[in-house]
Image (cartoon, rainbow, N blue to C red; front, top):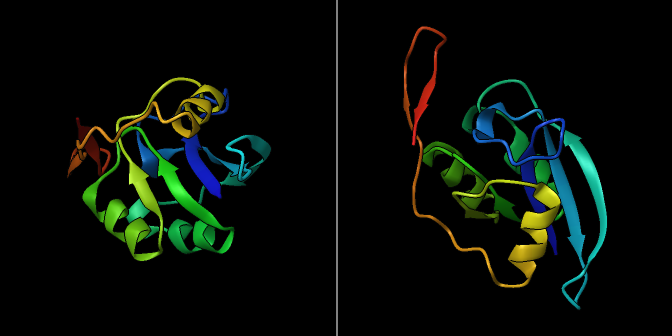
Length: 124
């Protein structure tokens, strides 16, 4: 199984899926151990309007551990066979360890995008 996490340059979970710098993609063994990881550059544009979901699906990603994420991005990820877990934060490496240990649950909270002076704002 592969798990993706939107991250900043210091490998912290990015608080806004559609504006992250990179995606860390973790390969998980059948014994629930991290056996590899790679970095995928984030495409320009918001998550739901980018081509990231099919790219992640092609890479074998089945789970997205995200901080803040909008419903449009969730819909696109789901339609590409990727489960979304919202409300994540902290170190991406530690988060994935906690997830495979069964210690991470979906917060149920979705970002509501509103047009601001820069085109987007996110209200958690």
